[in-house]
Image 1: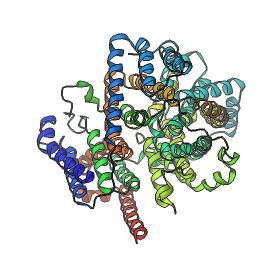
Image 2: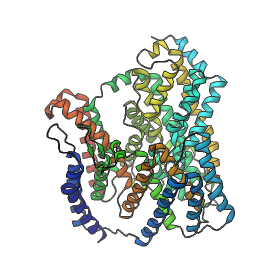
Image 3: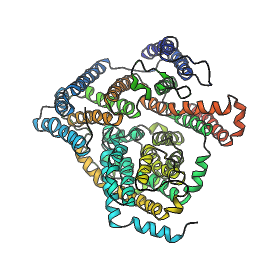
Image 4: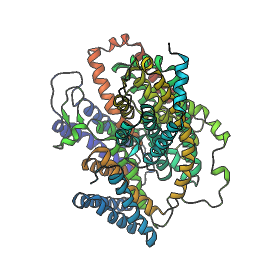
Length: 138
Length: 499
């Protein structure tokens, strides 16, 4: 069932790409052998054909753990928030906090490891890149 | 014809304690930065070049070569241990290396990577030393039409990596090719899919996409699966037999043909400017899997898979110097950095280099051979250190890896935009994996897609749209024929297995 739904989604994406996204996101050129939209359109058609095959074929045992996917999305959100904070308050000051939050979220409670992961290693990374290599960070 | 005494003098220059020191230091630095996701040897070389101003040409170039070679070995270590490739070309190594590490044999997996990397690298160095000039002339005959044929051949070989569902493999490849079209189109230079973000004019960065889809997506998967952050990243095996900690000579010898094939693929692709080590690693892996009597064991910790990927991606390095030294054309970013070191020291690479700077060139060859030996010894020590590091809990390892990915991609792409692309690629990679699509197929298609479109565009202009004009390109015709035979052979072997 999952594969059939995935196949239908791919067909819809391919159609959207072919009729909506690519015409909007590429320029129309009237000359040359390979137009800007040639390869994207070919890929959209290939995706629609392969999506059709996927939707019609005998479904395989594809199991998707949506709960785990939601947890992963949560972690990604935390990382994105950390990145946003780095833009505003610099990598050196935010990286320890981000590492600490991530470690606490995965269940780490031993303070020596928290100290290593949230203080020693983030400091070592920023020291290596900014001071030793002389490259600016976020 | 070069005087034999010049060759001997060059090698004698290379084997001085000062050069040895620079080579070993370069290898150590390369292995260290190669293991840092996103940073990699190319960036280390770029940073190191200004420091080479003050030293003699040979130690300077030997130092850079050491960094480059060390980085090839270093990139495989995190790929195997935590499924987080330090460099994109190590992604193929992770396919069998990480499953073997998860079986409690991380030392065996990393040692196999080290040995096959050194083997492949030594092979390409021997080719460089002995037949670089004729090989460069062949490489020079490879125009856009021949490169297009080579791309088609590469796709036909890599098609062997498509898993059980051909439809999903095709969709992943089409998505990868589509992602490669972001940016300016090769024929008219008009922007595509940039949605107002001018940063996308240059296309999506390979480092951001590869690290996002392979490394960050894997870290997210580990975070989401983690029930107890105190568990080690690689479960330690207390009663492990000594045989599971090392690679025996019999195991190494059993991989000899795999390494030879990988080294040959890497050397050929390395001699061609712009094809790169990522394609070589995946081509070699796919060819090995396809020709194996037990293809089902691939992806589950097969030593042959590690040997195939590592021998090929390392062989590219030496071969990259073939067009550089003989024609003055850099085959990769790393080779371009080495060329800049030549120029800084007032040496002009090109056809006259062997005549005018023969002693320096053979000194460089000597340094490359020394770097391979240094890689072997430094690698042995480095692997011990890494086997200690992975005893740390996964909470520490993966949170640190995230910080490294952010810092590395920020540096590699030159800004915040690349890091955002990395996070988006991570989300896509996670979803693709969850629904049974291969992110590896996506990455390969993404990597080859841009080059394929450029070659196709140039070929169509050269042929004036007339396919029959291909008759004037015998090498391209031969490669198309080999690609066709490969595809037919693959379908035939698949059907035979199904029967």
